[in-house]
Length: 114
Image 1 (cartoon, rainbow, N blue to C red):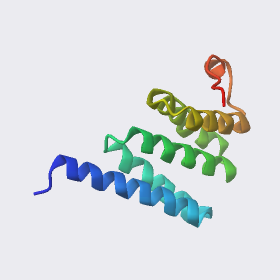
Image 2: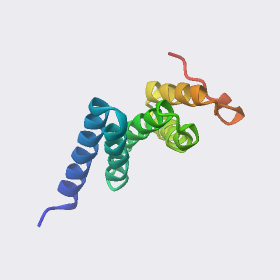
Image 3: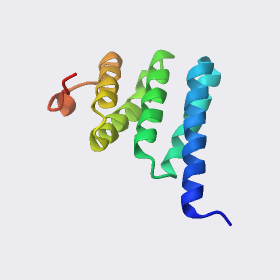
């Protein structure tokens, strides 16, 4: 029987694979793959990978005109990025939120330097 550590690695690999395949595929197929990446990371301790998956999902939703659907994944990506010390990821998520028209006072306190 596989260990919990092994299962965690498998879920992380599945999530990364779905995210990368989603980015490569683009369009509706890519969006489906990005949507599959997020739950794979939610079941694993790979918080940084989850933040990347959420960022890419939010950005893809925004690009397809689903601005309101993009907000929660992008907000969560900002918060996870901050907690992981991934300032570039958090800044990119903030930029995406800005393009989606959602950056307001809640995120004004944290503007990372690049």
